[in-house]
Amino acid sequence: MCIPGQVASRAALVIRNYSRDHPIFLELSDYFWETPQSKFPFPFGTKGSEDILTQVLAVANNFNIPHEIQRLPCKRCVVVGSGYRMKNSSLGDIIDKYDIVIRLNNAPVHKYEEDVGSKTTLRFFYPESAFFDPVLDNNPDTLLVLVPFKSLDIQWLKTVLKNEIRVKKGFWKKPPIILKVKSQNIRILNPYFMEFAATKLLGYVVTKGKINTKPTTGFMAISFAIHFCDMVHIAGFGYPSFDDTQPIHYYDKSIMKSLRRSSHKFPLEAIAIGNLLQKNIIQNLTYF
Image (cartoon, rainbow, N blue to C red; front, side, top):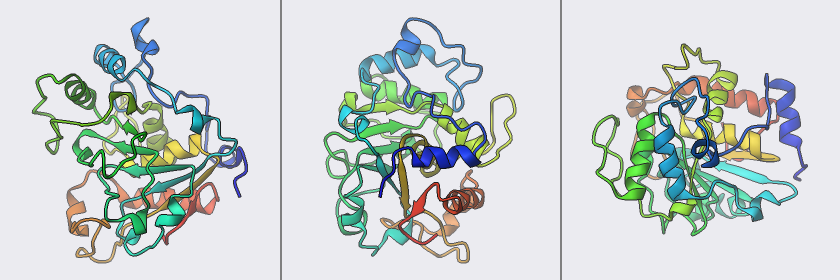
């Protein structure tokens, strides 16, 4: 049963300075008429990227959650992780019943519907993870939410939306050079949620607006959900820690050993998710 305001009231009791008084997405009016006084560059601010943001947001030209979602009296959300535990879960029909289904990066839907469902309300991604199929893995009205980890992420979005000369350097993996999506379906997540996830939920130390380790896209989606939804369920989160040969994702052959090269701190995120589960702020559809 969904109770309006339940997640917000529970989060406010245990998370310091928790507040929903922040815009969800970046908006053109914040950059076109005046320059925001942002102290830091991405990922916690937009300093130095204002001109590019103005151009990107002018092309996207839509900055809100659709009215049919916003007007829901109680928003039931599920964040679908990419973990191997989604495989053979048979959760597809259950996932599709939620009001808002949030997916991550390039996690596919096509051919995996029985386990992960077919509905996609929002897909959180960053340039290096934007290799999803817009037709098979998303719905026509799916919002594609860019999680900007660096200023080059905004530059990349500008080049693919405006068909300009592509940026070649500064990415840990080559991002797509073409993004066949409707520009009006693009959103850019407010850097506030990155700061909240890093400092409030993970306890990372910030030095001059910078952190050495950034939250994962999945953790960012959870951070967003506990600010926007009245019910937050998760599925497919958590990695096996006992065997480097264990598979990571439900859709490919990646194994735990490959995570050694990652800059993310998965054990800390697991502890933070465990705390959110223990406080009953979020609930889990799979084991964790």
